[in-house]
Length: 302
Image (cartoon, rainbow, N blue to C red; front, side, top):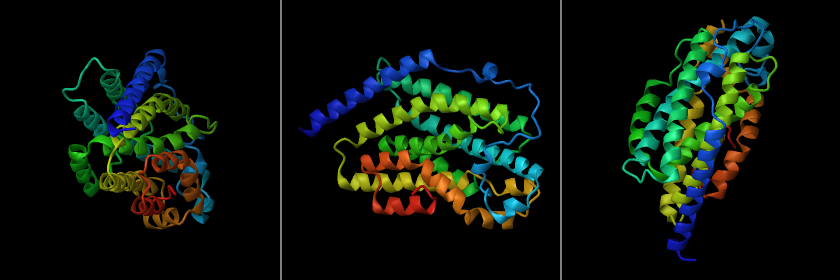
């Protein structure tokens, strides 16, 4: 089959996916302003995320912590994760909008891309309100990462943009699927996680279709470069998810806690298990090159 025919088929498949996602969005979307009970008090016994997903769970330091500290830590950890989500969602919106600039507005791809941007706006506001409700300060990535993000959102296009979106959403998704079912997790977090998981599942399907379309017929050099670019983005996202200040907020020595978290084999195994579908997809489309895999191992996605 010629590359032209293959590319046409890939584009048609991506358009069909976008059309079905638009229909799904019309049937099942949420307004966090009304779906979340923002006025409900926070039960002091409920965690911010399942304790098993805490960066310190299973370490000697965790065993020394009081239950009150554990609850407080998980709340600040989830707020740090949400804050990182807001940061990347703002990058995502700009990349998607730039990708769709001056394209045919009659296509399902164009219309779903704008639907996704609208979803992400609501998600960012939802996460911001949730963090404020839990009393957390803004946990932003380090200044260097923020400035690199400015460059990335300006230059990232095609499969690099959409695969990076997929990586960010998959990493959040694997934690939130557990949180939305956790009986010892705050109802606030369970509800916001449920909304995000449902709507992001459409975004991830769209991103996968776009990655396949953009890589159809791509040469080896381009695939190698794109694979490494996406892995670098994944590295900065994962390493920025939990700000070291969350440990201070829980009354811990931040340096000791960071060392414990870095050596936490339980958390590393949780990350690898949760990232299995993402890694399989990256391998399927050729974005799991040797240099990329080395970076994914450093952040425990492989």
